[in-house]
Image (cartoon, rainbow, N blue to C red; front, top):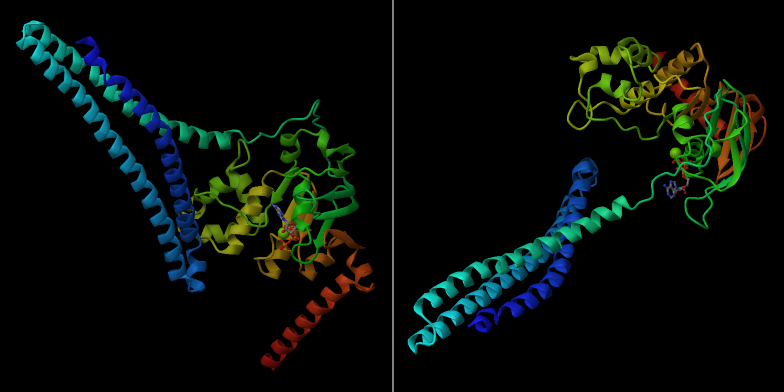
Amino acid sequence: MTIISMAVVPIIFVFAIMFFMKVKKAFKASDEAEGRLSTVLQENLTGVRVVRAFARQSYEIDKFDDKNVEYRDLTYNLIKLLAGYWCVSDFLCMLQIGMVLVFGSYWTSIGNISLGTLVVFTTYESMLLWPVRQMGRILTNLGKTMVSLKRIEEILEQPAEQPADNEQQPKIKGAIEFKNVSFGYNEGTQVLQDVSFKVKPGQTVAILGPTGSGKTSLMHLLPRLYDFKEGSITIDGTDIRKIEKKWLRKHIGIVLQEPFLYSKTIIDNIGLAKENVTENDIYDAARIASVHDVIEEFEKGYETLVGERGVTLSGGQKQRVAIARTLILNTPVLIFDDSLSAVDTETDASIRRALKHREKKATTFIISHRITTLCEADFILVLDEGKVVQTGTHQELINKPGLYQRIWSIQNALEEEINEDIQKSVS
Ligand SMILES: Nc1ncnc2c1ncn2[C@@H]1O[C@H](COP(=O)(O)OP(=O)(O)OP(=O)(O)O)[C@@H](O)[C@H]1O
Ligand SMILES: [Mg+2]
């Protein structure tokens, strides 16, 4: 009787383990398909204007449909597998009870065992089978958990930024020197080649160059957002690779080419990076960034929510809020990556004027194509295909044939044309 009551249990066991292997694969496939579906959806929602502007709705809908069908099919597959497992395992469990009943009844009828024994056996049998059935459920969940865990692990396993040995926290005043710096994002490709220049504290350096020439990359090396292998960069004589990253970044204010604002109020966005920030600090920074008056005009002023859930600022307003956020830190080094491109020439000039009149003049890098900006820099770096092709002041460079002179004469010609047009329309 005992043997019969246990006969099917090993089969259920083996079946559950085989199923466990299968469900792991099916769940992984369906989970990844869900990831792909969310990516398409997210891209479409954030890029909804691009999709409309290029009339790509039906193409994008088809793309979404493809991923959706894929996800549905794979999930359907998983559910079919689960359904199959449940009915087979339940069938086996019931079969087990059935066998006990049939054999037990027979043996009771011929007097081999008493009726009491049969009742006890069937009761125990149901108690025994309940956890066996549960095991399948646990294995299914275990399969899913293991897949999910692996996917989280992929992210957790990314190496964190490692501090170097005996890192320093030197006083930073803003003398910067690049010496024969070469850099590439991947092995084999060179984005910057043999870049060398020297900046004194408080100087303003303008960087000019065609798109893709490596201006942003050059500036990202300074706060060590990327590490370079060849050459050296020093701040006040200390190699930046020996300076603690957090310390270094605390002293370099960077306004990124594509500023990102959080879904918070303007005041929170500006005060984000500074501890114990006062309202006056925020107003001052906003004034220098020429955005104070604009903010005051909003109905809720500095308490206006921006970002995805709030008011959408114009490109130039967003850039100026980002500039204020950086300025508030009062860093000895400032980097503006094309940050003044979305504001008009006048605002651009007034921001630069305000920067100049600050108590502590920061060493400033400005990536820009605007001649008025370039004119006022202490010196200009002209980059082309990752190399510094020209350096000098505006006066020096306009007299030398080269990229700078070409860009200058084009902008000059344009300006003259505009001025002539204005004068014609006035007269
Ligand atoms: N994160 C990255 N990974 C790999 N390659 C990159 C990365 N960022 C930039 N690049 C490549 O490096 C080169 C220089 O790019 P960079 O962004 O520095 O140019 P840029 O001068 O700032 O151009 P733009 O004026 O358009 O902003 C480009 O060829 C670009 O494709
Ligand atoms: Mg750039």
